[in-house]
Image (cartoon, rainbow, N blue to C red):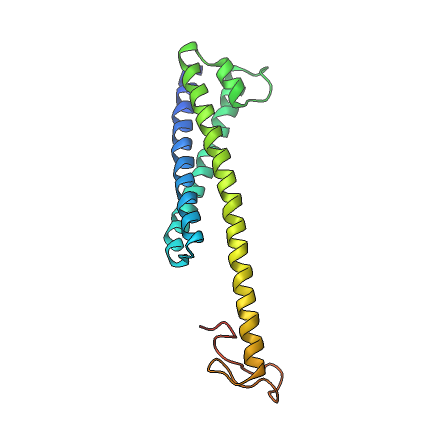
Amino acid sequence: MTTPREYFAYLLEGLKRELELQQELLDIARKKQGLLVTNNIEALVPLLEREEDLVFQTCSMEKRLKNIWKELTERFFPNAGEMHLSKIIELADMDMREEFRRLQESLTAVVEELRELNRRNAILIEDILNYISVVFSLLLREAERQESPYGVFRKGLPEGSIRGVLIDGVV
């Protein structure tokens, strides 16, 4: 790249790709929320794998964008100060400014919605884990009170002995 316009064009393409990645992450977060609400934990696995891949791609894209911003600043705008998207919009050619603005608005909206969905999903996951913990505590208490199909009577067993596969989490 030899001109500022080429750098700006590269940044536009990178930001478009970033928006695509963020939108797909948002779609996955929506699907995760539905699966968490319906307690369909098994269906989460492929979503989590895809999410992991997208997060890796997003981090890689952000690193490339940061490097190109740094190079653009050092080569053409050494006195511009810290480079951020608003500054890029200000420095870009008139015909590119609107596209940068549109991408900035879209990215902001998607990232804010994604942040909120991820916050809600974290609460749902915490609730599910708390529920599982309560259920296991109740099962453990019941197994300790009486012989059950999931373990043997606790009293009289040496410390550290096996109580049962369900209680010990071996299932």
